[in-house]
Each structure stands twice: as C-alpha cells, then as structure tokens.
Length: 216
Length: 216
DNA sequence: GTACATTTCAAACAAGTGTTTTAATTTAGT
DNA sequence: ACTAAATTAAAACACTTGTTTGAAATGTAC
Picture: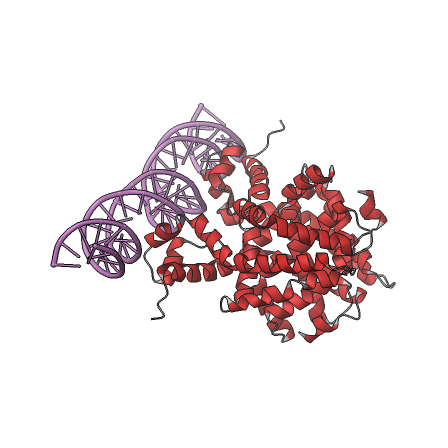
C-alpha cells in the first residue's frame, strides 16, 4: 500500500516550510499546495494553524524529550562529578537520532526550534514549558552541579545566552552554511555545527565571575 | 514652539512598537494610531513600511556606527596586543550613549537589532552590510588579532554564535528581565545585561580548539 | 446494496494588511 | 493677500490571511 495519509502529507509539507520560512511567514495555502491537499484539510484535521504548529513540533518532541529526560536522570543518579562538557554532550546523540524519524530530522527540528523561539513568543513557550518543564529542571540542576561556584541567577542568564546562541544559529542555519561554503570552502553538516557549539557554550557558561559582571 | 513634526511622531511610535512587538507583527495602523497621525502619512513621508523600518534603525546606526568605527580604528593603530575582553568592551560606551538620542535608547536599539535579525532575514541584513560592512571588517580583524591561534573559519562561526546570543537576549529582553525579577529579586538594567554578556562572549569566542570541533 | 459516517472539495467569508487616490487644508514665498 | 507648494485627511483599492460552509465523493458496516 504505502499510502501516506492526508494528515502526514500536511505535516511533512508544513515542517519543511515552517523550518525554512518561519511559522508566521508560511501560509496554509503554501502548505496545502505543497502537500497537494485541499486547503480546508488543515482545519478539518488539525483544527487551526496554531494546533498544526504544535503537532509539527510534537512529532519531534515526543521522541526527543523522553530520551533526554532519561539521560538526565541517569547522570543525576550517578555519583561522579559531571563536568559541563559532559552534560552538554548529552544532547548530541538524542538530537542525531531524530534523523530516524524523518529525512534530515535533526536539522529540521533544530530549525523549527529556532523559529519557535524567534517567530512566536507566546504560545509555543508556554506549550514547551508546560509539557517538558520537569525535564528542563533536571538539566538546570545538572548545570548547577557542574558549576558549583556560580550563583543561580548567573546560571539563569548564561543558560539563556546559550539558548540564544543555539536558537539563532539554527534559525539562520541555511544562511550560515552558505556563507561558510562560499568563504571557507567548508561544507559543514548540522552535526558539525553541534560539535562546534558545545565547546563554545561550555566555555561561556563556565566563564569565571568578573568584577564587572558581579557589580551589576 | 517645541513642536514635534509628523515624521518624528511616526518614528517615535514606530520604534516603540517595533521593539516590543517586532516589525512584521506591527501594522501601520497601530503606528499611526499611537502617533495620532493619519495612516497615509507613513507612505507620504517614508514611502513604504520597509523604508520606515530602515529609517527607525538609521536614527541609531548613524550615531553608533561612526563612533564604533573610530574606536576600532584607534585600537587597530595602537601597537599593543589587545585582548578579547578589551575588544568587546569597546561596544559598551557607544551603546550606552544611545540613551542620549532617546529615552531608553540603548535598550530600544538593542531590541530593534534583535528584531531585525530574527523577524526579517532579507533586506535588513543587506542594508546593514551595505552601509557598515567596512566597520564590521575592522572588528573581525581585531578579534582575529586577539585570537591568533584560531582559524578564520572558526572565528566566523563563533562570532555568529555570539551574534545569536546578543540578538536573542535583546529580543527577549523584556521577558528575561521579568523572570529574573520574579525568581531572583534582581532588577537588572540593560547595562547590567551588557556587563554580564561580555565575559560570557569572550570565554566562548576564545575557547580552545578541541578534537571534536576540529574533526568536523 | 443500502444506510451511515468520514473525508474531500470548491467557494465564499470576514478581517486585516500595505498602498493609492482624490480632495481639503495648511504652510510658505512674494 | 494671493498663489503655489507641501501636508493632512477620509476613503477606497487590491490583496492576503485563517476559517467556515454545504455539497459532492469516498469509505465502511450491516
């Protein structure tokens, strides 16, 4: 048979357009046109555009987040002192395994994540925290254990700095890849970007407290 | 007298709405309504929404960029070896002086910068590079001098990581400030955020090359 | 094969967008 | 004060958006 349902055709087309153009700048007509499906099918199967967006993200999050949660728990229960690079490296494998759920799943998901935080500030942030807040708490705890000298507020800021790095890099991933290819003859896959990110993030998060940063 | 022209009323209202809501999500009717000005005035005085956006940014960039350019040139001509933190710290004073051009000018401009890079990918990027590419080149050169061990391609990636940090932090500045105030009783001004950013960015950019990052 | 529920389809809807038009008004020069 | 230019104003334009409607088509169970 191998028939893909209308729902799946919509999800596939939507995630592709969302990743490359953003949520707000992708119209339902573009999606249904690419999916070769009637316009009304989106509202019939998903209810609204907002719910379609959440469904697209859920396909990845439902695979990724339990996997991450398990890794975090395992690291938390192990007695040995975890250094920051080890904690951050936990993301690598689960992220790369998203390539199993879709062609270029890792790249697509990370781009979607970037779009999710830059395009819409409201309902996606809530959606994510509401569903996966517990998992996130475990990660923060691990970072705090790895950086015992940093006050919680400083960690808060630095983790958001890091979120910005990841989100922005992934949202503009295509443009960056093109520039890197043109200027440096580099052809970096998404895996390469991840491996470049980890040391950068680890160094930033663990940077020593300075007088100027403490004063404010 | 003290009469503010229609153009200025539009610019003031526009920058305020653009900063808090983004360029795409702010309509001309919102702007003209807040400015208490006729809708057609935008097209009459600025031509189009796109040109209005550029004008809003220009008010700040025309002050900031020549100032930065001068600082960069000075640092380049000085013979002593500049360390990365010193190079990054060059931004602080010129940025804070934007408070002279407008109330909360620094915060507003940085938020606009964030919106500029996340909302629209196309014409603002071109606009910025076209007008201020030379200044940017000087900055990149200074960073390369401060990090002689890093290959140019690695610096390229890390500077874009850093751009992401700044842009994302500034775009979501309001939300972050609110969380920090609620969770840590912290009331951090934009100046405080800048002083927290510098050590984080410096550590990330200067982080040592690792085997894993070199392999990809 | 008939009855029922599910899904598809073309069309229209209501609301919002940036922009243009045309006339009225204000401002400035002589 | 008169004329010409610059500005403001209300209205309409052309277009896109997400969503809804009601009829046709398809699938499913008895």
